[in-house]
Length: 336
Length: 269
Image (cartoon, rainbow over all chains, first blue to last red; front, side, top):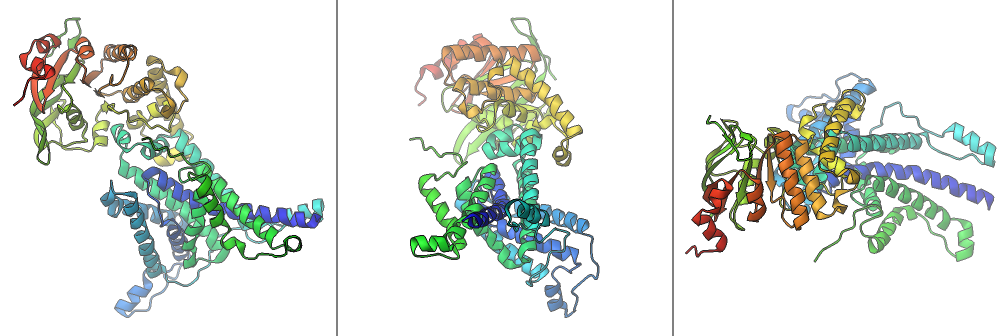
């Protein structure tokens, strides 16, 4: 039983870290939803697009190479250079800011005062448009992130836990890095939004558009800033997930994993996104661990497998019934 | 520019801060404001009054840029103002409050009033992210001004309270504070005393007079209720059905037959 407990703790810690990765995606959603009331379906694709762009720029890939070759009958693929990681990251961030500006200029500007459902549909359109553009720009093959991100088993934790418990925990360095990055991001964002004039302006716009305008805040520039920050977070999430499983188009499906996180944590709460992600990460790992174990089988007469595919959604469903605003969301009170 | 005048209580009123010339505002076929001209002078308390639906709030929305009039022009400090967005007009030094209170409900009193300093804070987003240095200094300087406003309005006790949780009268005061923090050249108040009890009305009147007196702020306010307005304002514009029916000192306006008719409800047929 003792070693079972240790395996369980290991699973929970790993779940916690996976949960942080979910939170990274959910965080982008929350920011945009708070500032503009838009449920941005494209957040996952933004993560994919960010990661694709980073790899493409770093490896010197020619953007739209396939298209250019098809039109002009040429055969260019690569500029033939390798950019240093830091240069590639800066260029990619610039690209995400340009993207945010274009979204505001060509999409949001024309949809001001529309129903939320229309804005939601627009972001679905945006998601598929970007997926297409990503494919056209950088090709659809699976790419490898070439950044100095530590990966593989963390030997310190392994040997330490072995000394303490007689069993070495397997904790991936990548997960630790992602968690640290997520913590830095959240702390920076929180301080920025609490104690700077732009941060206050972000919160002001999230609260009341008319009042924000009356104190001199331009909604459009705030939206560009919000989408830029969301784009940056998407880039971090995309790089982390890409480092885990390669940069491929299925990456955009992490949107679907962020949904239950948002239902749990509430759509308007940054801490909610983090805690929600952790609960789901830990929950699905521990649940899987318990229901697939032999002692559970002995006691109940059956075992379950691959519960991670659905656990998060069922948990979210339960929350929808008992606490529809999520753990940290604002309670919706309808006055009659 | 024409010269100012001296009020009965001895304050000197300066030249024209804002001049509305033949403003007409239409919504489709409905005429909300019809050919109205008036001016607001430096240092005065100027009231716009009228029955419900007279077009007072529309007038304020024209001044602050939420609405753009189809005809007429607006002169700000003697220069014709181009059609601008509300946030650009705010940057020019026109601050306002709203009839139905438009505060940032989830934010504290302090943060709400700090947003009023937005136009005065110039550091860029990058240095704000780094936080140390210029951004921190700027934050401290502006915080000082905001603390003065908080002291002035006697709302020290609710500094950290989210404004959504405050009673109505205090919310109105916080909203005034946010507008004051901008140190505006022209302060627009949309029914600052609406929905208040007698005591709250007296408090608010006192604050309005003090703001004008201590900071020399030019104030234009809208009121529905004639009583208080007549006591605190220097000059009054009276509107009815989108038209101007009177303009002058409270005494002049009080004795104007058209104004009396509008308030007592003479048949407009």
